[in-house]
Image 1: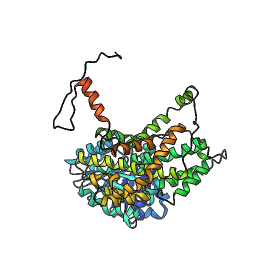
Image 2: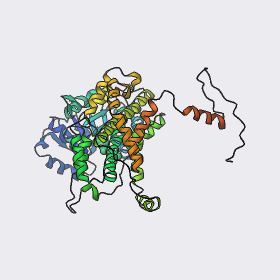
Image 3: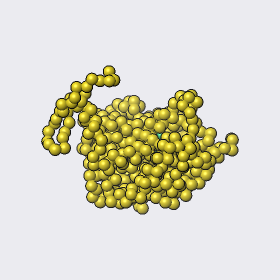
Image 4: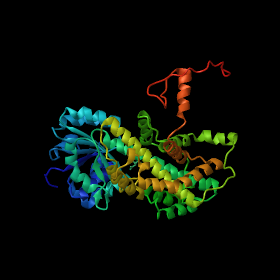
Length: 475
Ligand code: 6PG
């Protein structure tokens, strides 16, 4: 160990913090490390083995901060929420002007904006950074979505680019905007992740409950789709999971897993923020809702005997239709996510670059897929109204796949197999492609009972109609 100061400090040696610290060490940076439970620190260094020489373990926050090169860069990999707020107050007195502290967790971007403001006048900088790719990604190449000031980005950039996943040599990390921009983009990434996972699960549901296929057979089919336009990490994971056997029972692993999906909040935040901005990311909402309904397991079990369980007699879609339905669903799920990002960019004045975001999602992150490169190309060209579904390349893909999505959703309805994300995506598509929708009647209803007013097609201004006096039959 030398006395030379470290390039970066990593506080928090849980799964993600350890992996990022080792990744940094492997790329030639010296890394000061510490942890709230100090007994973890020495074990971590021992386990780092050949990389231990690049690590500088410290057992107090003061020594850890003191060990860093100025201006300091400190990455906190600790639980978001109250622990992060407490940590900021503890570390702030130890910091100097120009130092940067980074929250690398899945934080609520509203909290990130608040923390950014809290540090603004202290001379120190706060960065919210989304890190995607799980433990393996963090260790060997994550995708990272960085917010905060340009000053912090200049400090962080060489290290972030060195440890990031590479897509054809380009690092999957970028400074996306100020304050909460990085965490917001990560939140929407996770929303898209929820939708993509759910849509794959919905196709699994059709094949299991509609066609009576066993898990390995469904897994084998999904695996063949990896060679086509659906090629992606989440499909690969799903195929492999379906083909995994439980060593205890010899049954497919998925058959012994309880059908209740957890969530830590990012998918839900995407939907909440979308709704706050007058958007509806229905494919993501379907996925969040499905996880919520799944948790009501005892109710579902009771309801099965009351409401009648099971699948109704109907045609199961062709395999090719299911594959294409997923392609359409993936395009629409992403298009909704990007629409939410666009709305946030306007609302918070972030100037988010959708092409850049697509590019840093092409490798390292959980939603990496072949389609992301196409999305990046579509965003690099002029996009009518900024909408992914209007890009000429996407129009062609949708023309090819929407009929299959339609048949799949119709089959789900006939079979009685719930497809909340796929059908939500289709409903959005059908709403967006219709120049004249049906909400003129909603406006009439609002004006009828509440004199809310409406706009007319043939005149400028706000109007009220003289509606008939109703002798209500439903009073
Ligand atoms: C990633 C993941 C990761 C995690 C999310 C979602 O990008 O590496 O998104 O951050 O999967 O926290 O987790 P939940 O499904 O538990 O909400």
